[in-house]
Amino acid sequence: ILVTPIIVYHFWWMEIILLYRLYFGTDETVGDGKEFDVYMSYARNTEEEEFVLNTLRSVLENEYGYKVFIYERDSLPGGLITDETLAYIWKSRRLVVVLSPNYLIRGTQALLELKAGTERMARTGQIRVILLEFIPVRKVSQVVELRRLKAVMATIKWEGERSRDQRSRL
Image (cartoon, rainbow, N blue to C red; front, top):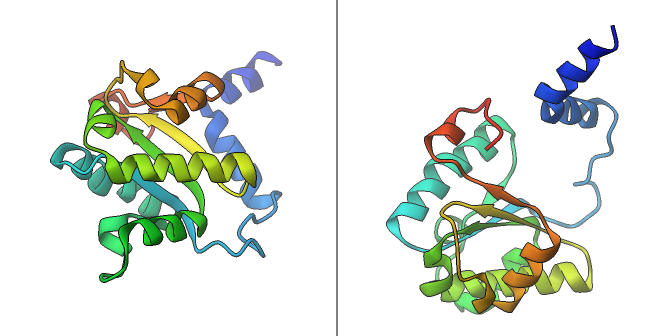
């Protein structure tokens, strides 16, 4: 009799937590002044853009109802990239960092997003940074903020096609 609840919890722990929050949890969006649930930070290249726009955005917006901010899609034209990036990160509850080797090489805006998010998290605690390893990154030590985050936080690992199934645990 005791084994059944343990097995159920083991396989459906995320769904149980989300269901609990739906009925008994407090709404974190009330009174926090944030406009977006998630700010997506990723290397701006074809592979990562396809992953972020087609897979992550689709699941977060359509399946879970989150309001996702993607800079290229949602920012208004004409402003300074750095100022707008910082403003939109400050208007978000979470910063999802999609890690890949390209994130460190080409990612000037991506690195700005990472640095701004980690600084905001450390100083005020008003944003949560979530690391999602899309493609394994070996040279983490190149970026101080990333090295510190990986030392203290768990990293979600994307497992390719195995992770695409919405019932998977990434």
